[in-house]
Image (cartoon, rainbow, N blue to C red; front, side, top):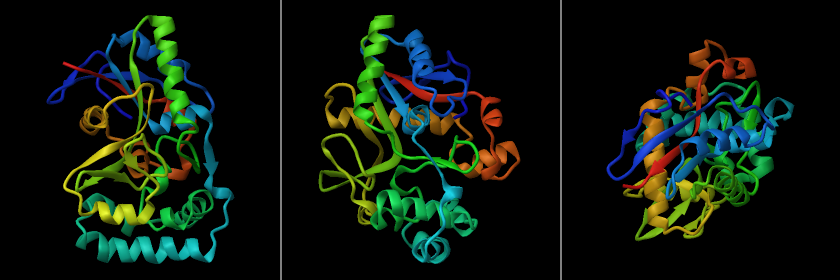
Length: 287
């Protein structure tokens, strides 16, 4: 994700945010650069909030969608269900963001293979979501690769927090988040994503997404935390990090990425991604 200069801080209503700027973390590269750059900035009591995509990319938890032959179900989900029923009917009725609606209406033929990947890895209840299914991310990955949700995010959070404490002496809470929403209705928290921290009902798929259209407020979804933290605090911290990204990145979607590099999404290379700064994590500092 794009960012301002490394030392710049932005104020949220209750927290200060410090961007952790790195180069492009290549597939399978591990977490050393995130740990190094975060450790240089971290203080005791900080929350280190890491986006799920760089975690998955660092793990090499990627799938090449060009290798998947779309089934009839995948074709119908992409060409009819997402593009037309959601792009022209349900999306506008249920208040979907204008940008998302336009992206759905412009879905390319490659969306069929994407739906096939969702079907095979996470099932129909996630493939029925019109977009952003099961946390699969097409942005900030090269070629026709996509990143799945991180493997063992709790283990990753614990490892990174432990390494920062050991090497830099800073006792931080590492939180891994996904921008896919957590919703709340009648005091109960839920997300369509296949996993989330305790206190958030997860793996609700399309039905959760549909119910979320009637939620009064949404938050990014914490997938894991390196220590137990009150859920309401985790949601506030995740929101502060997402707000920083929202204000400072121009690469929110795969289409934004393609426009920046003036090429088709499937033609983005590691060299292109390495030519710009990235912010895989944000330090959220309590007042």
